[in-house]
Length: 325
Image (cartoon, rainbow, N blue to C red; front, side):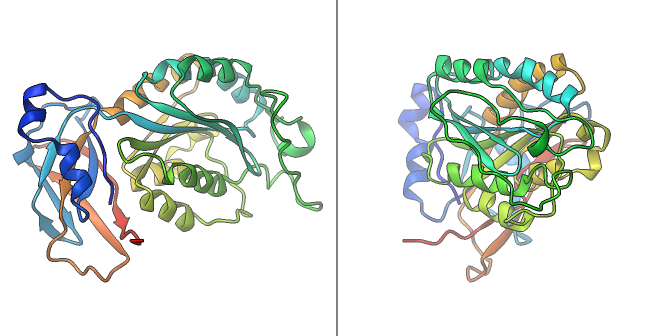
């Protein structure tokens, strides 16, 4: 369950019925952001409320709130710091463009990961500050077939940061060059307590490789995402573009109602930054108060349907019942 605030709303509508107030005061309201695309992958923006249907645990629910207004974002930009050298260089050359994807209404944090998650910048609404950190960011990069730990120096951002932890002696670096599940879990925890007035997202830039030695499993990370109402938007680079169905990026994106894109060049990566942010910000919002389902269950599945042919819908697959204080 989640509460969210609209970024902008016509004055007349706000006077008649403010969805923000309804979401804040209705404890049992489940809010589901939805993206609709046609067969070419183009977002469809003219769907009416009465065209949508939503089911929880197979039971149809009454849509009590509907909006197609944009939301501000709380975003963690999470960058893979164990990429092959050529891919790391392409991402390195593109990262300044990330700042241009966000508006003055968004708040953004920045982090890197390999064996461990490394925070780079805490949440900020200052786009100039974000740009400055991106400009000074230096990705490690590694030679194919080699682990990141022995072949590279730590990423350099500023002199005040703490050094990342060193892998345990005896670990085989070639297999343990990044822990994707742990990094996503850490990013979800960062977003857990962000304002409910925003749509919470992780922008993941990675080739999708993952070690077998994560502290957290995929299931742990997914529960953290769904419990905090976080969607994953992934940009697959390097080997991810060649193995699209076989990497975990799409699993995280589809389960959380996000999306996954692939890029094979610097120009494609740069173009995707703005496209991904706009898609995350401009989703339909459906909300309902659960009825006819077993409230004793910890997890509830969600299915969104639309009464229009040949459309692809992106929405999270379920949610965990929050633990009330």
